[in-house]
Structure formats: structure tokens, C-alpha cells
Image (cartoon, rainbow, N blue to C red; front, side, top):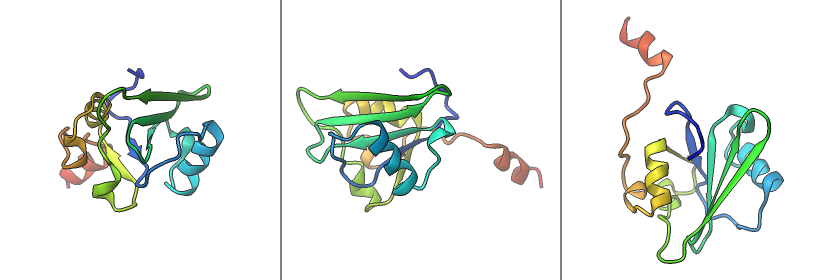
Length: 125
């Protein structure tokens, strides 16, 4: 989909988003409301209140990419229900399921957690 690996984190805004927002306004939500660094290479997910539209914001190293999907039938999962307004972290596997219309994403994690360097340091102590 986006040419990213499993190390990339996905963060979903914990509240519904107005889908009229574009690059700059969504970027302001990432830094202000989500408290994340826009140029980190992570993927940021925004979902409309009616859950028929979703947008992904992604910095590929040269500029911002904005991906949008509109469902003709059905609705996306309400990622904000489980997060209670906080930013929700998803794996790339969960993002793929979300974009396919799976409701499982909003209930529990399905992908394995990516092992970080910090995890390895703690394991060898």
C-alpha cells in the first residue's frame, strides 16, 4: 500500500475528524492534538464521524502524502470508541484490516508487536 515496513507505527486520532481538512490542518492535529512528530515517517489515521471516509497522512522523506478512502457500502470501525478520545496506536496489519472494513480493529489488537531495540536491551539484563 504505502511502501512502509512493519517498524512504522500507525496512530489514529481518538475523535471523529472533519474530512474537509487537508494537509496543513491534519498536520496541525498530528503535532497539537496527537502530540506526535509529523516527519517521523509514521502513518496517521483520521476517520469521519459518519465512518464512511478515512484519510491517512504520511511523510515519505520528501513531502507529505495524503491518502483518502470513501466506502460505497458499510462503515469503517469507530477507532475512537475503545480509545475514549486518546490517540490509538495500530499495527500495519490492523491498518490493513481497518481499510478493508474489518470491525476487529476497534476491539482488540491482532498483529504481533514489533520488537524494538529497547526490548532487546531489557531482555538481556
